[in-house]
Amino acid sequence: ISLWAMPVSRPYNPNAKRMAEMIQADWAKVGVKAEIVSFEWGEYLKRTAAGEQDAYLLGGSSDNGDPDNMLSYLLSCDGVKGGSNRSRWCDPAFEKLLQDGRVAADPKQRADIYARAQAILKVEVPVAPIAHSVVAIPIRKSVLNYVLDPFGRQNFAAVDMAE
Image 1 (tube, rainbow, N blue to C red):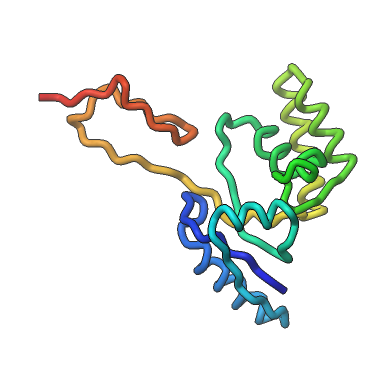
Image 2: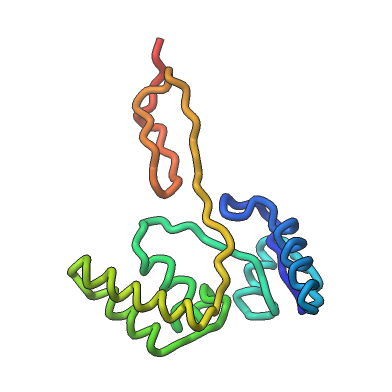
C-alpha cells in the first residue's frame, strides 16, 4: 500500500514524513506493508485530488468555525466531484444531513443534525483524524492592540508598541 506524506509543514502536521514513518511502523505490526511516497506540493495536491493514492496525509484548518465548513468541503459528495473530498467517500444519508444542516436556522437543531452526521462518520470511517492543532501566538507586554484571530489570520493594522 502506498502512504503519501505531504512535503510541507502545516500547523496540524509539522512533519508529515515523520508521521508517515510512525504510521508505517504501526501498520507493519499488524502485517500491512506501506511504502512512503511524496511529491512536490502542487503535484501532491493534484494527484490526491485525482485519487491516485492508496492512503495519504492531508488536513485543513477551518476559516469560520462552522461544522459545515469542514464536513462539506472534505467529505461531501460534491467534494468528490470537485476534488476537495480526496477520500472519495460519498454517503447519501450523510449528504442529506449536510444539506439539512446548511439550511437549519435554529442552532440547537443544527447541532443535532451535525451530531448525527458525525455519528455516520464514526461508523463509516472514511477518514482517520489524527491531530488537531492549537496555534499559540506569544506576545510581549509592549505590543498594543493586537487581536488574536481564532482562525489564524494575522492583522497588524491597529498594532502599536508601548514606549
